[in-house]
Image (cartoon, rainbow, N blue to C red; front, side):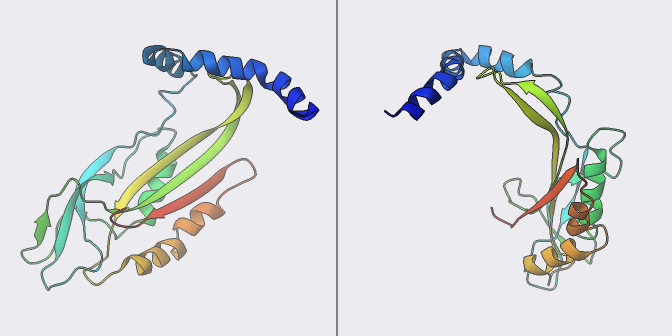
Length: 196
């Protein structure tokens, strides 16, 4: 072991000892430390959801087929800290989810395990000083909200790649969300295809 490694060991020993002590705690004790983090229970996004319908991509046939979903964002999120994230996401996905199943004798499929395509919007801001419950070292933690919502085709002929391009470039879409970032607020998005 070289001198640099020895010096590093000395500087890291206190944090390592704290880490070992944390690992030795019971699950209940670890949870209590987590729950003690300021605002940890109230700062996480908890959107209001609605029941609705989504048309899967690359569907075939002449009868419109919908999958039922209970994860559509409600149009009214109130004055919660994450309301602007929810509203922006819902706007970006407009016309790619439906409140009612339209069409002549539409087919409605109820499958709670079906993995819809999803879009996630994330907003990070307001870095605050915190102390790690594990190492007892200080660090800066941003206030972060991530909200996801399933989406599908506008109609039976729509495909995922076309939808992504449209959602990115439309007014109020994903690119506009990122472009609204500032020096203190970072906004990002992530697409997840069907079945993943």
